[in-house]
Length: 340
Ligand SMILES: [Zn+2]
Image (tube, rainbow, N blue to C red; front, side, top):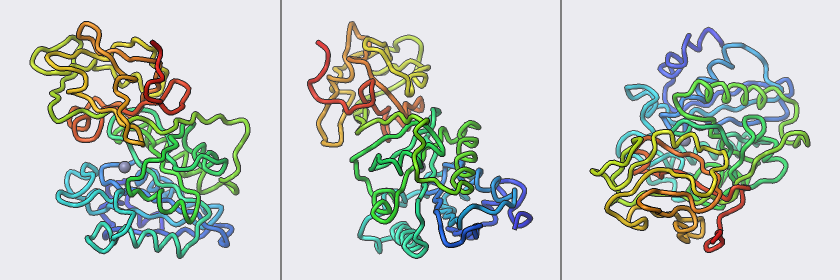
């Protein structure tokens, strides 16, 4: 097997003939775990880690089913740069009926059928974030099994009620499932997190019992801070007059630490806060005034916050969101409950 893998992750990817399932027989073949990766073609850490792990030629503790999904998008040049092929649906929004409307839906259904067939004891779905930043897990459940799975990779878990049609939402009904965001798609540290995590996931006899000595920082139902279509944006050290919103270029440094109340994130010119931002929680309430305020044109945090998935890429900030926020202790932000 190792010699068939190619020398590099890129060669490994090039040799794949569409979505791929690899089954590794374990020392205990009566049990099984599943690794799903590359649901997004521009998130290479999972494939890189898997390539490195397979090259070592080790037998896993239990049988491992690996699904490498969006091979076509990842192969489209330049490789590992297209989240989806243009005009296609985001595969990680296709894990809900109806499935038979396009190729993505049918691939999602096929992946679910594989999981039903193999009945794994746990599923890890391995992703990268678009911006740089530390790793974290995402799950719709935060019991001991999910915390144990999370700690194979990282010490942070986003526990969400948000339903988007992602794999974990539906596979969770079959088996404990955690999505791992192992860090930025171009970060070496993310590739290392992915490799170390799958090494634990593949080789440990038990991955579902939580170790009491490992703390997990749980963040509940984060608010999504989005920019409105009207918002023009730049990143600079000083306010720019040609855009509404200037964000400090080092804003990524606020990822996951506690950002104190009164921290300056940037500047606003020629617009009100609510013309530029939407800050919705999972109940779709707007919490903008609980998160941010303007003081003499400076954009300031309203209360101590934990911010994450902050991006410094204007295109991502506009298309997806600028960042997520919870209270400093990880609890969900509540409208109106802020220091006065
Ligand atoms: Zn992803």
